[in-house]
Length: 142
Image 1 (cartoon, rainbow, N blue to C red):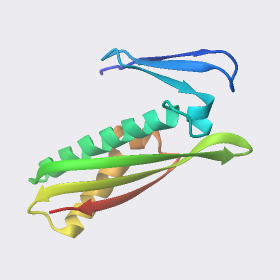
Image 2: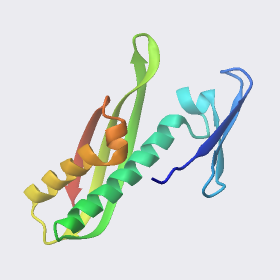
Image 3: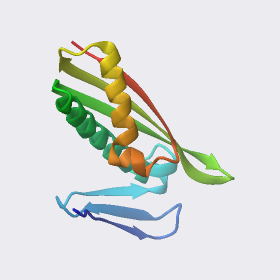
Image 4: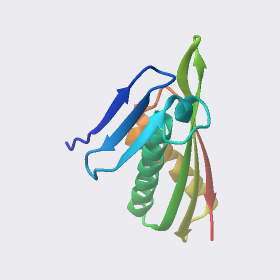
């Protein structure tokens, strides 16, 4: 199986420190801080990266499921909102909400919703996050 990797470096204490995330496949680097994770500061955070991974995974899985059933997916556009809250008095990822809009020729609403639920349940990132509440709002667009 394929493996992928990324690196995160953190310098300093939690509130005043700074970090850098590097994606090995592309060399892309971005910063993160306490403020970007727990407040509204600039930079990314682990939850946003999980959201990006989940949105990408769901979109690919949904497209694959659709094609496997004979439908032509023209576009699958997904946003994943990852919620960070408290569990047992400690910070924890509490849920993920997927919102997808898709253009698919020749599909009816019931089949569309059933296949979207299949993708939500079975994409690899959803399976990795199975302990979380994962919700989906899927909209078929013309």
